Length: 134
Image (cartoon, rainbow, N blue to C red):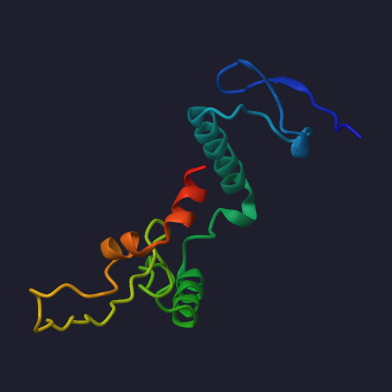
């Protein structure tokens, strides 16, 4: 089922726009940043003009209310940096260092070993080499 859409005229810039389907009846401005800012400012002005909201941010009662809230929520106004374990780097895998192994040096470097790869080629039977060539 398709939701209704509605073309409206943006109140701040007077341009036509299609309102979001989730708030067709309430959206009065387009999605441009300047229009959003103007809409927010108008909304705040409307809220402050109501008699019950005029003294919301003033007076000793409100100061006490804010102080109590800050005591109950210490540090909520600060932006916390994520700990290293909480925010893994998405572009790099974790690296686990491996122990370094040392290879021993053989004493008889001059004498070739019997099972070297180069000499194993000459040991192959001629029949098998001929079969592979075919």
